[in-house]
Amino acid sequence: AAGVIQSPRHLIKEKRETATLKCYPIPRHDTVYWYQQGPGQDPQFLISFYEKMQSDKGSIPDRFSAQQFSDYHSELNMSSLELGDSALYFCASRAGTGYYEQYFGPGTRLTVT
Amino acid sequence: GENVEQHPSTLSVQEGDSAVIKCTYSDSASNYFPWYKQELGKRPQLIIDIRSNVGEKKDQRIAVTLNKTAKHFSLHITETQPEDSAVYFCAASKSDFGNEKLTFGTGTRLTIIP
Image 1: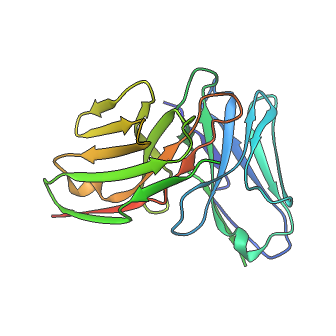
Image 2: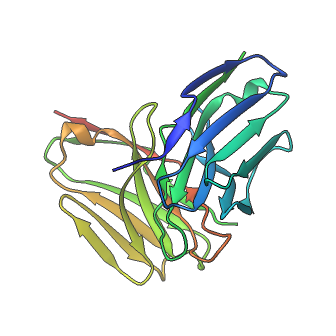
């Protein structure tokens, strides 16, 4: 079965640079969630989208922005990167209203040097 | 907001024995409780979940129980195998629109001793 796709899988950036992470949800899933997981920590919710509209917002820095496009893929844009932004970034998708399960992509490992 | 506590943080059991991980949640409006297994550097993998209208759910060697009154839920793994070694996260969420984000517990590192 098709799964959530994320790209790139690994990304190395320097401080103050920008990064764009992409997420392609499972086909026919209309809801996308972004989570950040630091080393040894649990995933923390950043932001979510339903039918191309932001549906919820968590502890996402103002330096980050995200959107969901007409084909339901989502991009997380990160600017003025800081060392503390180094983490695993996961995207998860859900089938929509009436469905509860969130399925995670393989993640993007971002390293800021 | 929701707060999920998870215990223990580490757990070692002999192969073939059972393992139990417990979580408590704070928001009585939460109604969906999944469990994820995560191997090092990999994605969280949904292994079992339970909704608030059910008290127990079982899938082969794993089971989850929910006590809504006490606001706690538990993961039970029987006949443990070396491949069960991983970090396990419990989570809680609500089903109403705009509130489905998962709030995770802090994780349990399970080690199965051969």
